[in-house]
Image 1 (tube, rainbow, N blue to C red):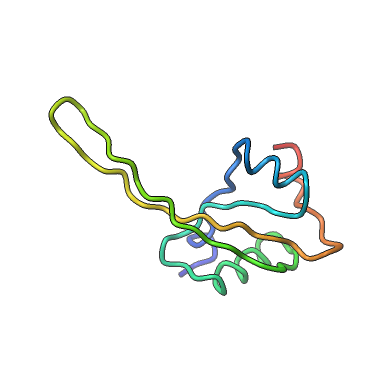
Image 2: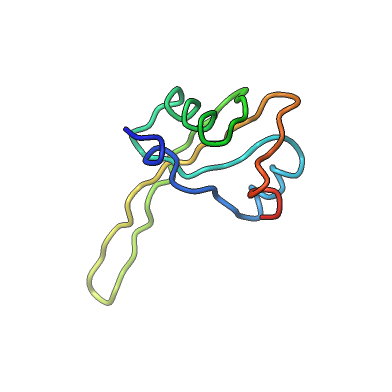
Length: 96
């Protein structure tokens, strides 16, 4: 799996913005099949910052209806990445 396939996008919500301000935690949407080791290597290569720890969780897709037809959105995975002491957040994530 390529590095750009593992890390899909940073998640910018109210909850993740509070976590980013308090400490060194960044939240990303990642590939469902990626494990913590692959995520760590991808973050260190893309951002150039050392990773202290990673927590992952799977967000289950919601059931949606359009009239009498029902469907389900696909499940996706997010990773809470904690940077080591002394590491700075990337500049493109500072203002977000």
